[in-house]
Image 1 (tube, rainbow, N blue to C red):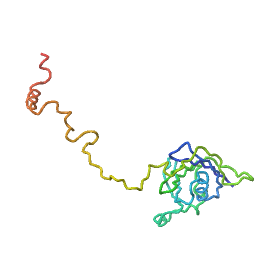
Image 2 (cartoon, helix red, strand yellow):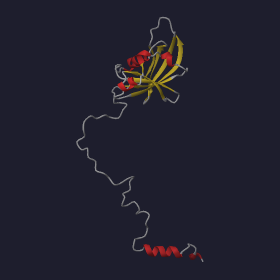
Image 3 (tube, rainbow, N blue to C red):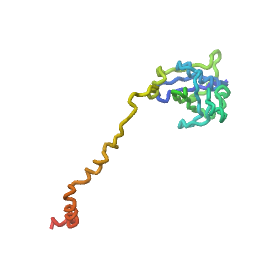
Image 4 (cartoon, helix red, strand yellow):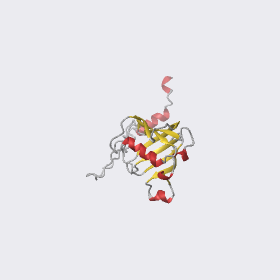
Length: 196
């Protein structure tokens, strides 16, 4: 039996990754569970793998605990799909979103195809690098459920550091009283008269 070695990297923490050996007959649910054995995160959270290209563009979705909308469009389910069904490339990539409420994004890349070693239990963690973020908000902007006391924000007429009133002040070098006089001087002057 073939063994797939995947490198699983946190998208926002490139120095944190896990290399996991998965039997080719494993399902995506098996991989979902194995990833979270190495992170310590709960496995019973809605998540999805997406078959990806080299630029990590999301393709076919393979979901765990999908929403009703996804069920209605007959999304593929992790527990029903074997990894081997979507391994078309020796460096096959999957984009993995864990916990849609406060998501972590992972890049999962096939880095080697090995032969099964006799007496070794699979799936197996091959390599672990870096500490995973401990709280679910660590990779996201802070989420606040509390309503702020002062929700009203006074509108500011200043845009890009310029008030509407002051917008043209830098362009008018002459006072309004002298405006007519300045125009006459400019009309009669070609800029060369003083030189002759």
